Length: 304
Image (cartoon, rainbow, N blue to C red):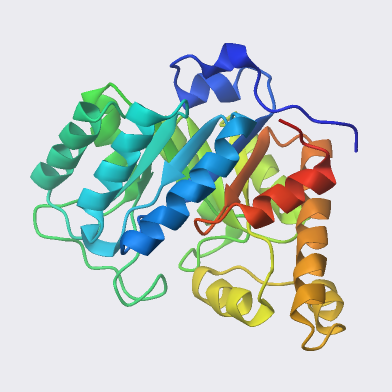
């Protein structure tokens, strides 16, 4: 693959994520989660410092189940907005919140200089396959959360997409209907769950386009560094690891270094296939580390 430059300096000025994604420039973005302790926070900021020179389109900070990391998410995302050149996006879920509490979180984000939000229904504490019970005085669907934030104004809105379908969706077609409903309610872009077949992403985009919606959909990338861990996570969220990829990983037995190298190679191959197939960019689930992402960038010839 030929050299790929990150975002040009002209895109480093304050600007919504949706505008950037529609600018025609190839997007790279990174996702972090709120650290649990001081050591974790040091690790997070080391990752941010290592990745900032690549001038990502944005970076996102997740939101714990039931609002468990709300204050940390606001603090970390606000610090990114104040102290770095990065465009931050904060997550927000319906789980465990009344509408009034959702508005309070949005007030906190706005006060911290955050103008981009990722809106999710969120998973029950028992996991994504558990029955959903809405909070009294709260919201039931991500679409309602999108409508609320759209009506309030002041934020670019991202939502989740599922190349293999949400684990509770009746079908891939029904799942696409939900994503289209979120777009029509005001969502301006989507980011997918991790997946490992480019064809699944392409098919999702086609389903959305067939419904008359041109929502930019960023593929979410998670390299396989530990096959067992990825398979367990995939079972929860409805993502499967293809048999040919399992075979490629398992041929190295217990050789952790070789497994890691093969996982990076597989991720880079997927990234190339997605970009060549027209994806607007790549969104990396970093797990608050920079090394794997930088190794993928090296294989893609992405340079600072």
